[in-house]
Image 1: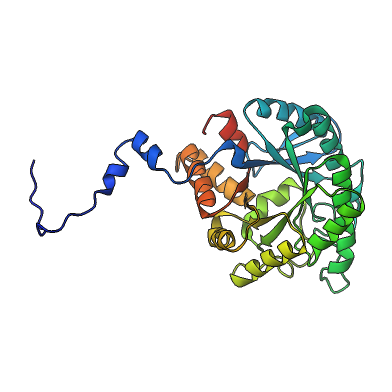
Image 2: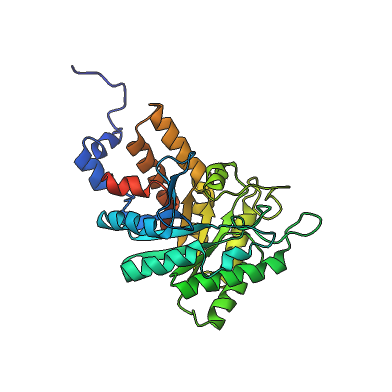
Length: 334
C-alpha cells in the first residue's frame, strides 16, 4: 500500500535499513568481528591428582588438578583454544602467601605439564597475586594497622613471577594493584634471564562488586577490611588512566581493564591513549549473571554472550579474558 510522506520534494532521507535487510548484508557491513583468537580462558588449578570440582556460583567452571587440566585442554585445543590464564588454589595459606612462589605448587606444576604436552601451541599466562595464598585474603603482606605493606609485598610478587617464568609461562599477569609492581617484576625477570617473558599488568583493576564468584573459586575471603585501599575506586575516571600510563612507563607489555562491561569507557579511553595491547576481563560476576539469567529463560545465552564480548572489543580491547570461552568453542558460537 502506498503511503504519502509529508516531506519536501527537495529532501531525501537516508535509508539505513539497506544495511540491515538480511544476515548477509549485516555481515558485510559489520565493523567489529569477534574471533577465537581474541579469547583467553581462565583456569583454576588446585593440587593433587584426578581432582575436578565444579564451582557452585560459576556453572561449568571447575577447580582442577594439573592432570585434569591436561585432559580438559586436550579437548578444547581441538576446538581452537589458543590462550589460557592460570590461577592457583594452594594446600595451605599463611600471612605472607609464601605458597605463591612454591615451585612445586599447583600453578608451576600445571605450567610445566602444559608446556610438556602442548609446547608453543598454547599461550600460557599466569596470574601473579597473593590474595589466594594469604590467610587474611589480602593481595599482599599487611601491616599491624591493616593496610597493605606495598614495598614488602613487591618482593613476594616478584618471586612468584620468576617461579612461573622458570616453569615456562609465556606471560605473567600481576593483578595485586601494588605500586611499582611492574618495575619490580620486570627487574626480577630480567635478572633471571627471562627477557622474553611478557608482563600483562592489571593496570585498571577496580574495587568491584562483580568479583564474588571468583573469590569462591580461589577460596579466598577477607578476615578484615577491604581492598579499597589499593584497588581503584569505581567513581574515578582519571586515576585508572594515570595508572595505565605509569605501568607502561615501568615496562608493561600490555595492560588490563577489570571488570570489562561496567568499564567500557575506560577501555575506550585507554585505546585512544596508549599503543600497547589492551586486555579486558569479563569477570566472574558478569559470567554468573549471564549463566543464571539464561537458566531462568530471561534471554538467549549465545546471543547475549556474543553481544557482551563484541561490546568489549568495540570499546577497544584486543584480547578478552572470559569464562564463556569454552562454550563459544565447544558449541561453535563463532
